[in-house]
Amino acid sequence: MSTTVQITQPAAESLARWRALSDKQKREARLAVVIDRVAASMAMENEPVSEAWIQQAKQTRV
Image (cartoon, rainbow, N blue to C red):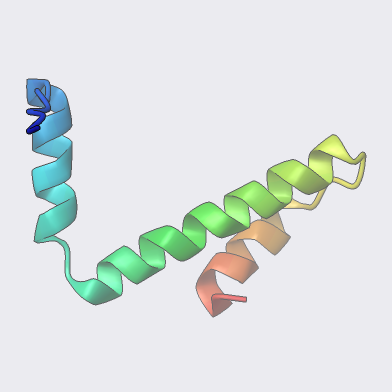
């Protein structure tokens, strides 16, 4: 049984842009998302982090 998935035009364009990125660019994008999620999680726990910390973490990839 085969299933065909239809992808909308904007999604297809986004996927094409992602696939066109280098491995390094993909890694940096993934790390940035992790940092954003950690900052959001800390804020939900009433432990907000400064914008300076977020920027430093993204620059140093901590």
